[in-house]
Amino acid sequence: MKPRRKEGFAGQRLLVLPPAVVAQMAENPLTAPLHLTHIGYYPVAAQHWVERPAGAGALVLIYCVSGQGWVEQGGYRRELPAHHASLLPAESGHRYGSEAGWEIYFWHLAGRLQKSVAQRFAQAWSTGVGAVPFESGRLRLFEDMYRHLEAGYSPRHLEHVNLGLWALLDSLLYPPEAQPHRQGITPEDRAIAFMQRALHQKLNLPDLAEAAGLSVSHFSSRFRQATGYAPMDYFFRLKVQRACQYLDLTHLQVQEIAYKLGIEDPFYFSRRFKQVMGISPQGYRRRGG
Image (cartoon, rainbow, N blue to C red; front, side, top):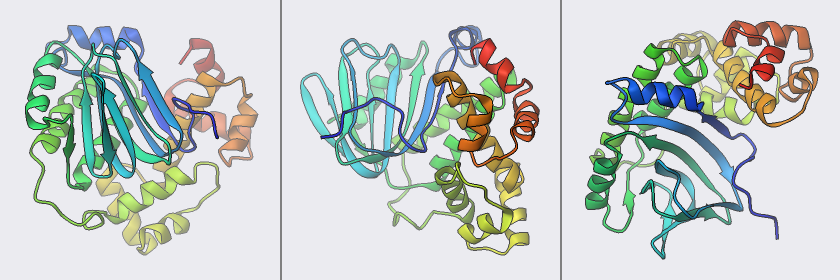
């Protein structure tokens, strides 16, 4: 049997906001009521296991889009299948995971209104798990939040991201009419999912357009309108986000990280990294993220 693990899954995306940034959000009147401390996406998480005997100190929102897992809180275990979500209280011990594997998005939420949010979701989801029909807009909210956070922690970015949390919660509490899973998937969604699976590869614009099912010109125009970025720029930003994880969590050299991300020229990688992050990979590692 494979060992269980909390993170480190292929293709995962995870941002843990620094304590100083969380403290800044707690003092801003616009973000103090509710703000992010973690945000992430695990595309294929098998043998996933998380246990927090005293809770996470923040609400833990888990949204499963495929596969199946479970959540356990207060001594009760409940299945968490695809198109369902669960909100775990901040100060209560809990466990969750998946043996066979699941695809999940998750957010940790803190702030002075976190108890009120937890109470409202407890009313709506009496079992602790709620059915939420697939909605592409919910995934777009995640992508928008993630994109702004990976671009930096300016007050403008933090306010934009955290005010968007209310739209996310609204989409879960008051979902639209049920629809087939794939009905809301757009060409941009397919392209982004393809990028996330291919961060280790060297792709070009025609590859991405083919994954989206569009011509290159039509795809480029639609993608820029939907995300604010050219497709290849967006793809490189995803690579930079993964590079930050390697810099934070491993001792790999910059050249090794570039190779793992399908980039043969480490100097080119370093230049582009600095363009995105405003600091070199070496400087990012020295700064501690």
